[in-house]
Length: 398
Ligand code: SAH
Image 1 (cartoon, rainbow, N blue to C red):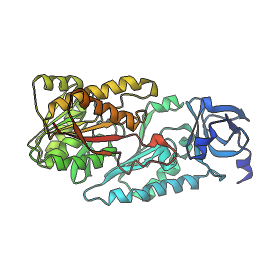
Image 2: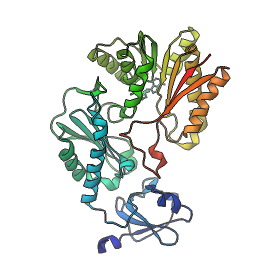
Image 3: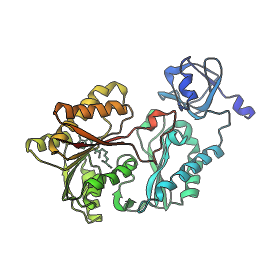
Image 4: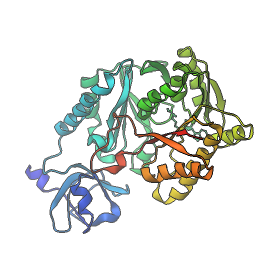
């Protein structure tokens, strides 16, 4: 520990909140702080101690963020550019497991706190790497992160997509800038042998939901000769896998016309037949039930219904409503794959909500499996928020 580090302002955490920090949690909320000793600018480094003055970690302070301190380390070590570069290298090295999959050239390279790089998101889309810095304290390390990424990944193009509205809440500007190379007219990625055109600057998230790669693959085994409905399809990840696995008929539904246009583009890229519908899935599902339609496989992958714990009851109603409709479309033997991507929705609550739909319909179901996000969105022990995606697969028994 250098003399400089010793002199950092000190954040005292109220009694009772030290346990999660000792378990490795990287956040201190504003209401967990008892007092701050010394002057600390937003984005500056602080030492965090518990109510007895015991060292808990070193991290970035931002009074404008609900997450007032984001810890970089729980050990008494200086925070340096070398530390940040080392974390970036470790994150990229771990992704070799994903990039070794046949026909796969896309993955999340850096998943924020779970890679011990708070507020840093980085996705690789073939030759294009998209970086986002969402925490004020990390902003000054943008260059070292970008240089290390260039070194580890050698992308054709590196884009800094600092356009997420979260940045404004943290007190930063929103902008997108190409840091290296030129952005191609169209970015086409390969996911388990499937080609996908992704919109890396205008799309949702950083362009594509990479967390579903393994679940996209998993759906294939149920799709031979099946009639498949992919609700909340985005650019067609599940639908394409279903079509290429030999589905008899695939329908993909999304509310975004831009997404639907990309499903059509992606179907053409893969020589697949997909029937696309631009609609609100809540209405579409109700309509399909009214028409007494039948599907062998239904996928539900809605956006996060809740961004806060307080909205949990209404989120549960949303999950239940679409599960009820989907089950009504499934005959005995039919498969439902249903997802929740909000970390505020605990796994057991989500599972019980979906299963209660089957109970209401007096139908028994087999729980095929309960899956998660793909492994390039790693779960950090002590940081439960890093496990957010729940993927529940059911088969209707009667
Ligand atoms: N299944 C996709 C990811 C889905 S993300 C994949 O595997 O890649 C959620 C999608 O739901 C987004 O594309 C969004 O446009 C869409 N969406 C949001 N609300 C919707 C609604 N009410 N009806 C239909 N689509 C909706």
